[in-house]
Length: 103
Image: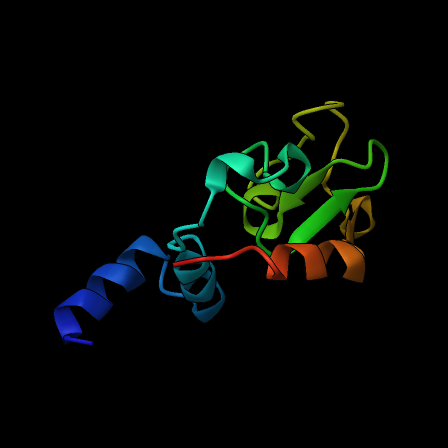
């Protein structure tokens, strides 16, 4: 990649390697995106879930990158300040997301 493009990506991703990976993940173009189940869509960014996390109280799923920016769950409005307020999604959900077709 040309260095200027890398510089722009790093600025957009807040220059951390984890954010850089997440930014690249959001650049997928999904095939038949309109047919992807709403349960696989993050209600914050409205894209298919990336590194999904589940809020332990309401069991709703969010992208890890999206939910970590918030202090309260957008559904049940309870706090998400503690690490144990979220849990990793099941392997089943991750496998379904991995099977989504991209261009």
